[in-house]
Image (tube, rainbow, N blue to C red; front, side, top):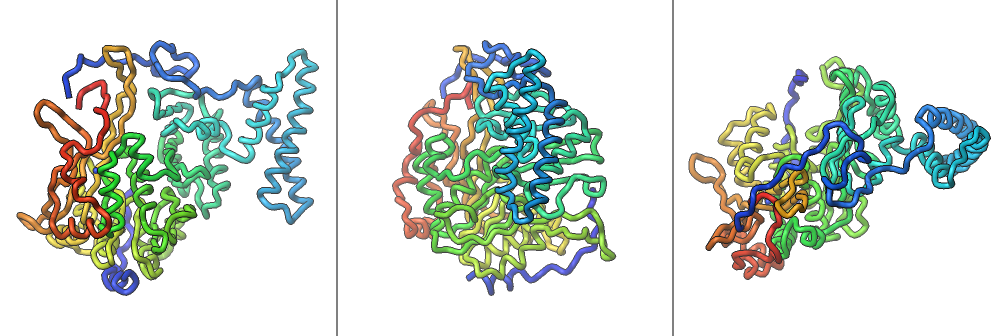
Length: 521
């Protein structure tokens, strides 16, 4: 929906920040692996997938109608217990709930056995867990959220698709019996997260929130034919650059360079398409910030979780807030706080760096001013299809900010603010098999590190590739390797921050083995 709210005068971000902040050989053609469109994971022929399948949850011996009745009985008893003890905390409520659920399910299992169908201990435990999930967790979503290999959960009404890190995408059983039940489940999750007034209603048909495990949920209803939900998982909380080296996202040479870039207070934009791992890379890079520094983070939903890292820097974490669906006399959505609304206050927090989880809108202008006017070392992520197009994307967002910025001024601001663009690439081959019968997999890796070197021809920012793919003497490396291009002043800053300049003289980097893809890159 087009935002028709009246523009408000833009804050003087430059003054605020000045005051407060002192990215082979030819093989046989691949074979496309067939995959049925609408099947449950249990019915997939195992010959099509050469990886262990642990996705299926423990089978329940009863239908969800029985679970709904057990949930209702347990919920009533839990409510009575909470009403009798006003001092009961949420943790107490959960513990009491477990005891009540055990009692309710045990009584039901005894009656169930009397009908001639005994439950095994595993089945009774599965029922207890399912009832607990319905009351205190994510219901039928919980087994998917508990699977460490699940990357995305995509729901459209009763159609459920699950993206895995280690196997092809699969369809799944419905999460809810009806669309109304699905909306109720999403609102139940919103209430459990305690994120203000966020709810999926006719007045607020779009909902964005973070789940307890750090996953990001986006939902729409009432403006779509059926409820549409996407849950994006974050599987790399607590990891560092060395973990990314082990997983093949970067090599040791690039890890060393990125560490120096962070400690050398270079402004960095992490770029790529959706789901490539931009936030994960930004998170592990931010963990290289010295613990003595005070850092501000700005996100629509907390995904970086730097404020929860006991070994990280001191973090002031700001999170946007959605509206309650009503508009005031000025046309502004009541209760809404956008990232651009929060930026002025963030810059008053005596910070040394600012990290923006994802730049999508008007917050691009204060972010660039923060990078330009402070000590440096600020970071953000951005959606763009190539490192070069990230410049155009930033310029477009500046022009769309509605503050009268010209194209020339946008380019100048970008050239002065950004030091490096790190481009992350995703190659998904999970639907392919090679001629040897081995299935493909997902490959996430940094392919380019681009330095912005100032104003170039036509007033646009000039740039050069510090790391990029290389093809030479019949050898091809699609991942980022040093190209020896870097400005002298920037190199001196990085050397002072601990960079071993010989790292930039390794033409093939530190990749220990070639990238094993089904289709040569």
